[in-house]
Length: 379
Image 1: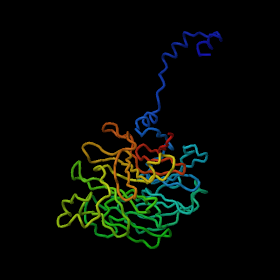
Image 2: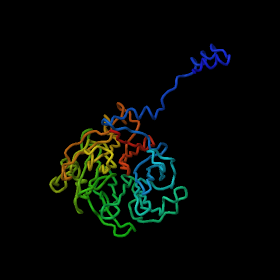
Image 3: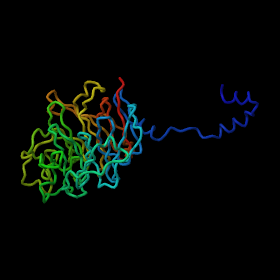
Image 4: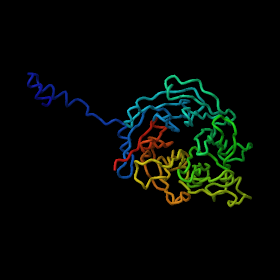
């Protein structure tokens, strides 16, 4: 029975009701839903919110019980997002720690949560059992530079069991005075054995290992103030330790730095496996290792592009797919997978980091919209 018939049956005046209904504002869709509707995905994929209210969401990691951990940058917080009923949506947003020095990076090992601040790496033991009352962290390593410029750390444990941590250049372009800058490094889980793995890396905030070859791949952000269209950001492959990827002499393999390029040969440095868009700020890449997406995505690279800040026309603000050859060593293509965070020249979100969940769905963090999205495939 509709509302008018119900009131008539009760003997109540329907004209007054009709006037009230006419005066009432029409319901509007939530802004969040309207934004998600703007995201374009391949056929069969859908995007939803895994969690909202995750202020400044950055790097993601998942524990053995399915709890997702999230770092942040300016907010100084680390979050836990449990999903106990496995419905593809976090039950709540828990602040594990706060007041930290830009705890961008998070990684899990043997039940301990490793958190990378700008100047150090700390560890919360037995974290899954103590989400709402985290133990006092142990200091794993406290000799990282304290420079804020490119100081946001992305961390992950490699196939060798070592913890990898980059140290970006403390500048737009310069010849760093200390060899620790513009590098990717690794150390043991207890903080000992710190050693360099790759040099000439201006600023990587995302890397992963090929699931078959176990080779390291990473994104690297090119320098600014050389115009709208150069240099390109980079996707690099580092199959062994000791390689140099060009900073500060060359960018994107063939663009000399105006100050530090003269006198250097591009052949002295490793060229990128793939040039990405200029100034797109390619960040927390991941190999897709799940089984939910179609087989064509298996062991391919997905790259969130945080978006440009110094182009006259904005670029990035999307997730790109890089397809590799059968050997997993050559990048064949570079194409959009998810886009729509940029509307015209106005971004409403900025994707940062990706994470493949055990069910094969893909999480995406967004530090502008303070959210974590879940991309799933339904055929």
